[in-house]
Length: 128
Length: 224
Image (cartoon, rainbow over all chains, first blue to last red; front, side, top):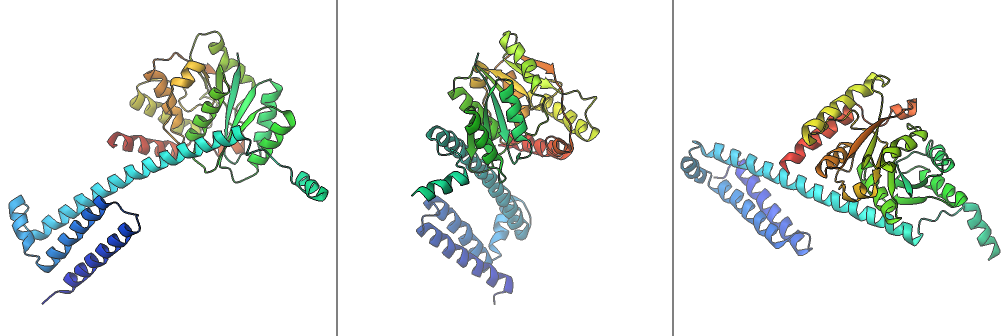
């Protein structure tokens, strides 16, 4: 008999895997990331189906209880993901700044930013 | 010697006109970097450039912060063949006459980089503590003790402007420039300057909050 938390975890895992595959098909996720996510969510589903599995791992790593092992692993993984994301965002921000700078300098040399007086604009329109 | 004044401006429509007119009166060429302003800064600057047939405007399509704007300005000035590059705040806190003071050590070849130092005794206490913390942070992270690490008035010779690499995008840029001066073993001189405190200039720049923000950022960068 499945407990409610098991049903929720399995459901979440399946939805997450489907979403990952859809994102991959749209070209928004790399193959490596897709595989990594599928493995992570499969582990979640397997553990949800048979929670006693974690006990073996807990004994093996010396953490005592299976639940402790899962929680600690989850926390560590989350921190790692946040760290990766922070670095990624920082890189994207840097690239964005470089792009904005390059555009600013190019627009200046190409004279795109020449100021046009609204009145002059109207005068030009009147002539035509 | 060709001197270019770099003026980073973000929503400075109230002050930028006076600042640029002062610069032109004193015979300096300028590069304004409009850091994605949403007010009339861009319009005002283009009008002045058109009227006087002097000066340049670089427009950041998105707001990228003080450090990014300064870097754009320096690159543009270098491309124009500047021999001396001065950074000058657009909010009217600097006295344009201080430009001559700050470029003097460069002209005399006594220094590669000159920074105007504000008088901390005249500084309102809300700013003083923030700036003292920043001086201390600059000392810890970059190993160089200066009197005013957050000063916005700086002068570089061409060599210094080319070698300094700016990565900080926000107010952390001031400390980073000081750090770069040390890293490239450039000669630094601090010259006393005036600061004009108005209600307007008081709202901007380094206060305690900005100081703490920069500190967090510097600590995070260690772990990168």
